[in-house]
Image 1: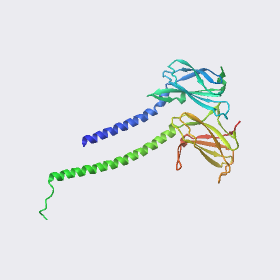
Image 2: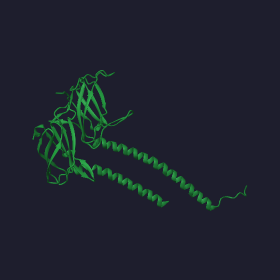
Image 3: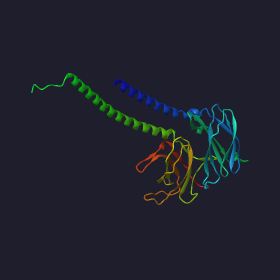
Image 4: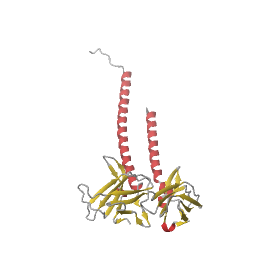
Length: 138
Length: 172
């Protein structure tokens, strides 16, 4: 009986510790984002796509990015669009991307994605916004 | 009567142990159930609190430093707003609380999901002929709160992350 009780207690305490650890790990996601940094230049758009050069300015790999865009006319169904682009950018590297879209955009927001334990983390605080004056025609 | 035999000491001991063990099992079961239920309840409350305060930050979309909230683009008595969810939790919708220039209130619950790390456009018709409502369009103040959980019986609002908008203009 003592052995059985000890076994039950051991299992229960391990489960408790694992639950708390998972919770704490989840809360440390923003710390991963502290190591992420990007800059964007060479942005231009035509009717179907937008081109941009993204630099990884920090020491942590950027595994992809989310592009949130805003069109010109609020009445349009595709006024707000979201595209996820999963192509990594190594630290201190610059990559050129072409993202498909519809219509002319008046704003884009690029949110870098980091990876921790095979989970993608959205680094909203490290996002970059480009307004209409930055989105020139190619 | 005095000739009746009692159970042997060995059997008595076994019976006592069996009784103690079964009683112990019942007590452990009962206390485990109530403790787990209390723990689950507390965990749910903590999880909800953390989700509301940390995982569901919302904003009104800004374009060229102007908030995307305005009225009467697609009709009369109509409010349009784009909400950006920057967190990892999703909301089932939003509650939009409006005050007119005489401080008369009205409320709309819009059950259109606001996904994690996503944007949603809300187009709300605010009828001024609601029974009992003295609200007169347009609004002078708008408060938007995410709805974490919506059912017929309960509406779980995240008021920690509400957005207050003081000036709302007509759409251009």
